[in-house]
Amino acid sequence: MHITVKVLNGQECTLAVSPSSQVSELKELVNTLMSIPIADQKLLYRGRTLGDDKALKEYEIVDGARLTLVVKKSSRDSPSPVTTSQPVPAPLAPVWEKLHLFLRRHFRERDADLVLAEFRKNFEMGLSRLSLDDIDRFAATKIRQQAAAS
Image 1 (cartoon, rainbow, N blue to C red):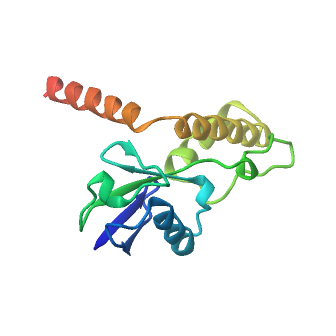
Image 2: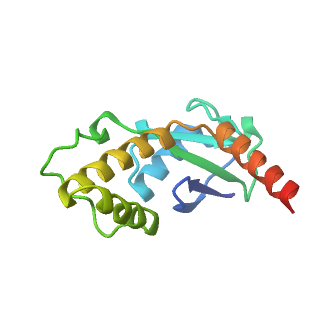
């Protein structure tokens, strides 16, 4: 059977596995194809975390299923403290570019870069702590607000 593993950042791959394959074997395939360390992988199916020692059929995973892969931050990837010599990564996404332009109106160039780098670090850290339930609640709230406004 073929299943699709989708990383929250948009990257995905399709894997050929058998229903009796263990989740740990699936993680090894993902590591091979996407270079994501096994220790940093958390696989979800229908909102449930998959245990490494269980077979795919125990979760009723069928041909064509889509699994979500959450990549945990490993200790070696933890952000380093912002220093005065740390440049703002280029190119910036449009939202970061607009924020950088705003900050440059209120700070010196070097200080604007430092503030932006610290803001991005805090934003990414907060985003990485969101669970799928948090994202679902946020999306449901925004959809209700949009429906009420129209």
